[in-house]
Image (cartoon, rainbow, N blue to C red; front, side):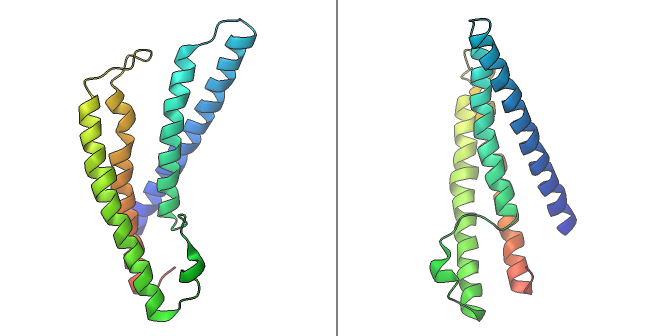
Length: 156
């Protein structure tokens, strides 16, 4: 399991970095086309917008994998021992339920609905853009299960 987690971490991190580099290059191209050639590129603007959405969701997934996600730790930090483990377990269960219902199920529904609608500029199904939601939902569920296992074993 740890080997699979390391592989998924590496893949999500690498894809996030590649997307970020692509966004920088596309934005530079967009600025050059707009200010030097007085001809804005709608292709690069649209692709950058979609890549930004993918970057945010993939980066959030990576952070879940590192168990560094955003949480309000004011109360949790004051807890210790078995009470803290119970709170961590409840948090991970809530994350799994949210990821399964909203990201996985809802993401599949919205991806399927949008496979018939094409982006007017990129000429691709908009469902491809939405497909990152259920993919990351599965990854977050996997990471949360690993976090639960690590908590129960007493690992960091």
